[in-house]
Length: 117
Image 1 (cartoon, rainbow, N blue to C red):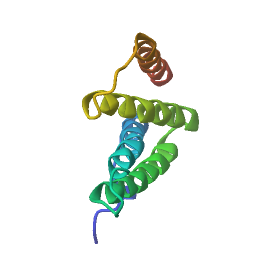
Image 2 (image 1 turned 180 degrees about the vertical axis):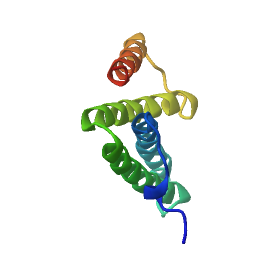
Image 3 (image 1 turned 90 degrees about the horizontal axis):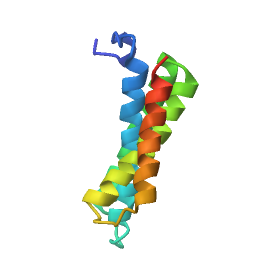
C-alpha cells in the first residue's frame, strides 16, 4: 500500500519538469566527483555523486516515459552542462570567459526552443 511513482498524476508539462530535475542531478555528478577527488579515501561526496547519478537515471527514465525522447535528452544534456557551469563559478571560483558565457546563453535559448512547441 504505498505511494508508487506510476500512480502520480504528472500532468501535461511533467516531461519537461522531470527532465530538468534529471539534468540537474546528472550535472551534480561531475561537481561532486571533483570535490571527492581531493580525498584519497571514500568520501561522502563520492557517495553523493553515485546517489545523484542513480536519481538522475530514474528521473530520465520517467521523463522519457512521459514525453518525447528528443525533448528529454535535449533538456537533460543542457541542464547537465549548465549545472556544472554554475557550480564551477560559485563553488570552485573558476574564471569564465565571455565565450563560455555566450555558450551558456545559447544553451538556454536552445532549451527554450526545444520546450516550446
